[in-house]
Length: 296
Ligand SMILES: [Zn+2]
Image 1 (cartoon, helix red, strand yellow):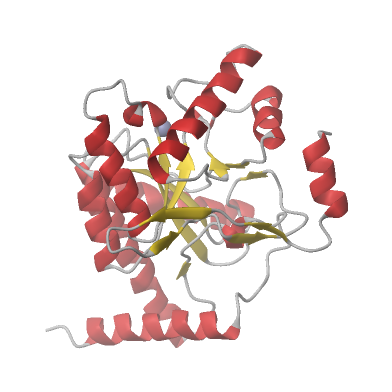
Image 2: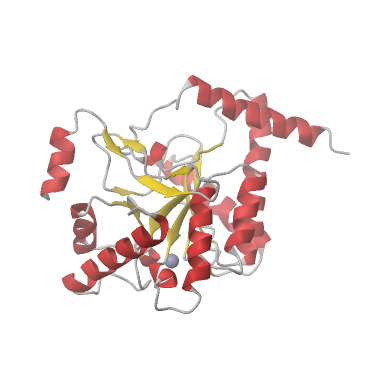
């Protein structure tokens, strides 16, 4: 076990506070980054997203992309959803054409209240790389993101979700939490929003029926227009299901703003995220269902 991991487990009596100061927004206010999360002392270094609660968090990979990321940000704003964006750092490399334009979008992601994670530098599978290659991907992306958004992210998603013992341990040594997913609508291999929704429903049903898992981390990409529409359809689907769950007085689908509720060992996540939070989830569902019922 690596030293940093050991100390996290042994010394973490008090929750490890991962506080990172973000950049300053256009209107002069300090931007609170994703990273001010209270991490439980026994937080796993790799999270897959499996949860026994109806909690959903959306993640978007491979951007920022000027043709599509602004449309995704618009959709997220309209539906009042906060997500995590795993940025491919090569897109922000000062030597690449268009890097300045992409940097503005990366800063806009934060300004709108979303979280930013690293998706490596080159977006190549990391397990076949040498140790030096793995370290280079981690450190180069970390320093580029630090330059562009003002802090080094605490979350890392290896390209294609491909891990190895070496990749995991180099990330843990640098105090990253590796974030995989358990709900993959495969928006990279389809071309229309309806199929994205269809694949999401199939995958969620599989998790529920075979794994007794009710929610999780959704993998999508802000680099396709059909993903923007697909996200809207998935949101609508979850909120529509809530109308029935409300009537049956069951736990509602809760589209959570951060990855924090997933930072627990499997099966140990808290049943409630607080009475205030639960009341807000219920109020949101009631408002959605009421508006839907009064549609002509
Ligand atoms: Zn990717």
